[in-house]
Amino acid sequence: MIVLPFAVMGWLAHPPDAGAVLAGAAAGALPNGVAYMAYFALIRRIGVARSLSVTYLMPFVALVLCVTCSANRSTGASSPGWLSS
Image 1 (cartoon, rainbow, N blue to C red):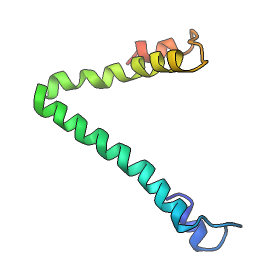
Image 2 (tube, one colour; image 1 turned 135 degrees about the vertical axis):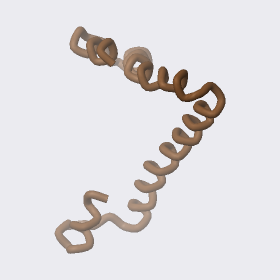
Image 3 (cartoon, helix red, strand yellow; image 1 turned 60 degrees about the horizontal axis):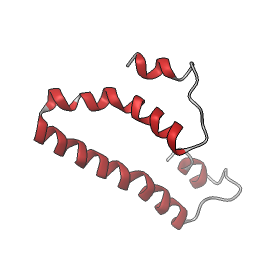
Image 4 (tube, one colour; image 1 turned 180 degrees about the vertical axis):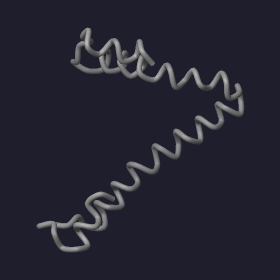
């Protein structure tokens, strides 16, 4: 969406084709739609107050997944981010 006005006005040297635009839209809309449906199903199942704990656990889970699934290491600078949330 950020590049679209520039492509329409002809400011890009090689504007993206329709397939690339549709792929980008699908990559953004599909996972977000599934995540929202799962989150609202969680709210319906356990309630609003308990479902808010998901918000506080996300930074910690992201850090753990990053360390375990990739070659990244956790440093002291990354830990306060999830401790403060």
